[in-house]
Amino acid sequence: MTVALASPTPADIRLLCRDDKFRAPATANLCDGHVQANVIILPNKFAADFRALCARNPVPCPLLGETLPGDATVPARLAANADIRYDLPLYRTYVDGAYVEEKRDVAKEWKEDSVAFFIGCSYSFEAALTAQGLVPRHTELNRNVPMYRTKVPLAAAGVFGGNMVVSMRPYPLALLPLVRETTRPFVLAHGEPVAWGVEGARALGITDLDGTKPDFGDATEIREGEVAVYWGCGVTPQLSVMDSKIPGLVLSHAPGHMLVLDMLNKDVCV
Image 1 (tube, rainbow, N blue to C red):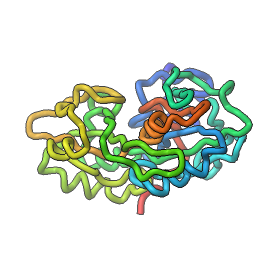
Image 2: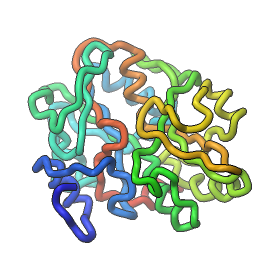
Image 3: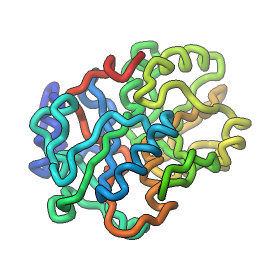
Image 4: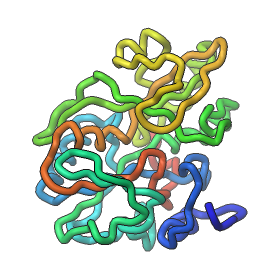
């Protein structure tokens, strides 16, 4: 962040984004106790299919809410006085399913039929992991979490299909039961891991076994005695957009650069 704030609130972070003053490498570890959301912005004609995609794939795509068509106001129950055109640190644009560029705001790209969807993010359970002494490695290294494409197919919905994306955090195998127990309640933030270790990576179709070449995010360190642990990831809708090659313009958050909500982490748990 280019402006130093002792304990920034979610509203503070959104205002920094709106004023183009946010320059942290990611939103991980900000505003402890508050939910962060992945964002996908689509033409309204694809909205019903996208809702169905989320309903059929709740682990990688837990839907928190959406805007009204053409209205850039984020629902107040998620974030008060938030404008989805400006309040993310970094956006990505796609045309006909192909990535085009990253942008600091999408005011010019927002259309009368645009609908923004908000997907739960694994950052919500990282404070709980830290409280158990399980500090995520990317937090320790001040990096973005590594993320991977998998070969696990989504349950298709209308125009949307493709494969799941996962995020990865390394932990000692002996601590895996605690890791699973800690993250399991966060059902609207991807919940417990979907796979771990070399066999888990192979089942997902991941060949980067040492964490140095992720498809998204930053490289990490898997230390002696640790295994890679994989969770469903909210970058999945972006990959679905690319794989489905839907026509026209689609917008999203850049990986690791989430919308910081007023919503509390307890609200994504059961």
